[in-house]
Amino acid sequence: MKEKDIEEVRSFNRVYTVFMGILNQRFLQSKFSLVETRVLHAALHQDGITPSEITALLNIDKSYLSRIITSLLRRKVLRKRKSADDGRSIHLSITEIGRREFEKLNEASNLQVAGLLAQLSESDCKRLVKNMSEIRSILENR
Amino acid sequence: MKEKDIEEVRSFNRVYTVFMGILNQRFLQSKFSLVETRVLHAALHQDGITPSEITALLNIDKSYLSRIITSLLRRKVLRKRKSADDGRSIHLSITEIGRREFEKLNEASNLQVAGLLAQLSESDCKRLVKNMSEIRSILENR
DNA sequence: CTAAATAGTGGACAAAGTCAACTAAATGCA
DNA sequence: TGCATTTAGTTGACTTTGTCCACTATTTAG
Image (cartoon, rainbow over all chains, first blue to last red):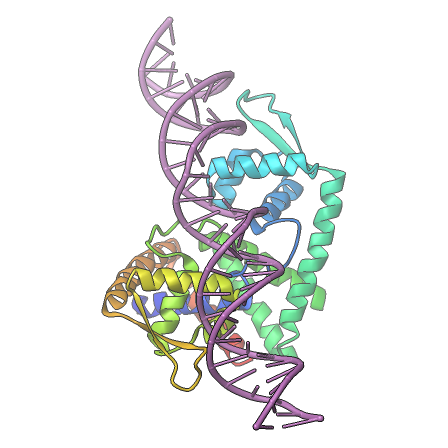
């Protein structure tokens, strides 16, 4: 039983990563890489988030994240301030420019997903979304 | 309605890519990258597959694939022969070494997925897998 | 007060991925 | 048939991503 489950998860991964174009990162040709958009998303939705919180959230290497943040700061989409309660740390916020860029990104990403969903019938689309939302709730409440 | 659907798909992506560790490619420290494993998988399950079939299957750049194939040939996990019916093309097969490597990879990957599933209750796991299998069938029969 | 742990940075690479140009073979069609 | 187009795959020349490790500055624990 467990064997079958594992097989199914892996088959799902194979199909899903191709469907979503995760294998070729440039599919959505944006100014931002996938990980960069996740960092922006985090800063937008958790204003003042610290790099170490982001590494925990996204499960990526801290030096890699440090470079990403440097680049996002240089591009003026993120802003940092030093932490009052921990002198080693910083707090990140999205800037007005970042907000606008993120909005553009959102629209492009919405279009891309809309294109994928357009390949499905109305009822399949409904089922797809229902299943995704169940999976997400399972994973979020684990 | 459609807006909501798109939002859900994108939320799902965020949660799922983190859960599966897709953001940090080295999570499973294997000799093979994610894309390389997909190429091996393709050669194993569709013996004699051509590079152009693989680019269509995985939706990746042909020059990138060409380098990947060169590397897999060098590492003796793939074998090629020239096509009889199209002189420009080649057919790929997995070698005995490749088969063994793939088997190891499989076990490592199974362990990783087992570790993820172990975080869930029995019933959540069942539901997760059920939902994935539905999604997969929707995507495969589109 | 000192040792150990933690937050973030930076050097030095290695690996991944992209883009355009190129060769050779196959195909289309006048 | 014969020449223009397409198509399959390769290669050069990069750019971008991602990793490992050492290092500084704080903070925390004992």
